[in-house]
Length: 209
Image (cartoon, rainbow, N blue to C red; front, side):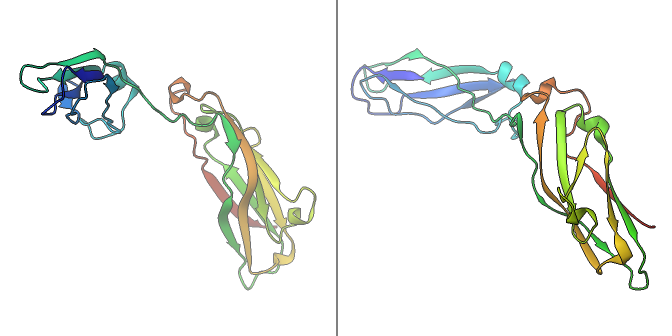
């Protein structure tokens, strides 16, 4: 709000005011100066729901100002009241977070070959949010770890990445995400198809060969 007092204020004289979901709330009361200045109050959460603001609540938000005399025989004046909305939209594209996923542990009595398959099990829901998703998987001690590139690519299109461990290998083999990238269909989740998710669900299957 843009406000001032017509003389030096002896008491607080103005506050911002909002109405959301039928309930009214006041911001902090301000002590005005004789020159026009900007005063504001921030609600990071909807005070009525105590949750994050939704776009529907912002679209329906009513804003106003409360004024009273700043001093005896003087008045408070306001020329403008407005709301500023700050929000964080997801990045349209970026890098896939890296880190360990599974630990493959060979049974002490087995010395044969192992086949390790990693499945992306929720591709239907992921494609409603992603334009593409490329996950670089690395399994230490695998045949693929000794090749170039030393990872297998798991995507929305192939849905599975396979690794081979010869002769059982060592007792433990760590499967991890070494890199990758993604691109969303839109920065605005409301434009994604119903049933979307941005969290890949992975299933690891280990079989004897």
